[in-house]
Length: 190
Image 1 (cartoon, rainbow, N blue to C red):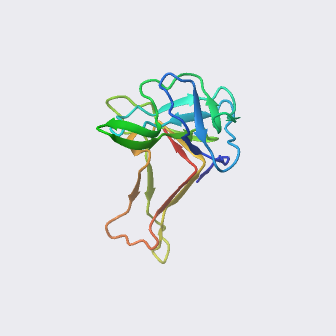
Image 2 (tube, rainbow, N blue to C red):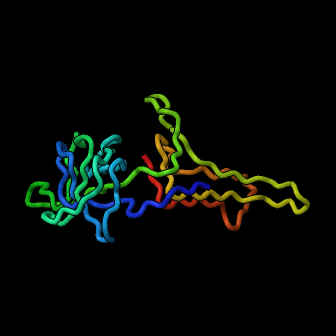
Image 3 (tube, rainbow, N blue to C red):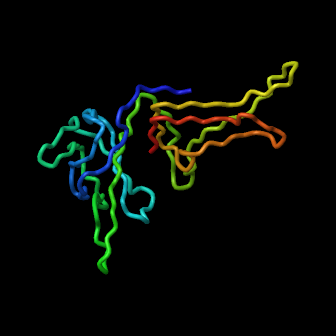
């Protein structure tokens, strides 16, 4: 089990389109003040439908989130531009009189507990993964311990393809009731 310090408001949405050259973003937050301090690591998700890996960009806040009364949003200021692509917020003209509604996600990545995989390369990009095994206890009743893992407010870094998956290793003869359990709450993956 892993229990980091709780992070309130772990994600938000863009309130206005974020230009690829900008170092500030305007985000929505309807649950109260946005308590993202200077030094927090945030990710700006891509709004391109065919976005290849690597278009989500993480940046470090250079100051705490501040209410912007002119634009009615919380203003984030970060260390460098997101580069590559704009992150949209609102209706985008796609031609022929058609529009599509897009609103980029902004997530706070930093946590007090970090699980990090070995640095990945182009050859070895699987990254880390989490496995739960059944284990015979060898007691008189021949019982089996069913695995359970709970991760709360934990940052998973450099986990590659295995970041959001977990392997449950059981034998074909196993019939768990209840089955092995994985709980992820307030975690970040990048």
